[in-house]
Length: 92
View 1: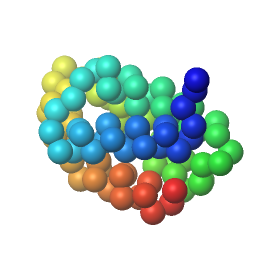
View 2 (view 1 turned 45 degrees about the vertical axis):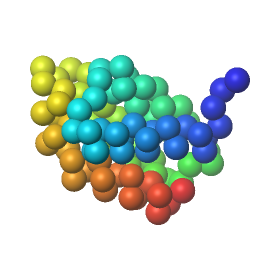
View 3 (view 1 turned 180 degrees about the vertical axis):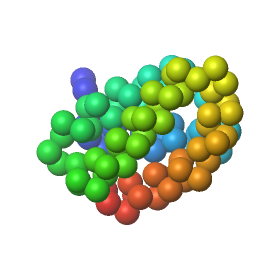
View 4 (view 1 turned 90 degrees about the horizontal axis):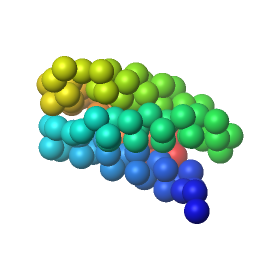
């Protein structure tokens, strides 16, 4: 059974929160973020402001999957991670 868009948003925020809190993550989590963002971007129920945030999250996850030092990539995006979660909460 596919996840509802609400569950997808919750999962997206959970991964971002974990990256922000733990200052580390995995390539698999970045790949999961990419899949979630792709699915949410085609959903008409998602606010256009959230879609702009999703574009940034997608770029973050792509850079993460290609990074030689994923933990440093996550660390350098701490402020963005927190802001994205707050912004998604505001618009969803």
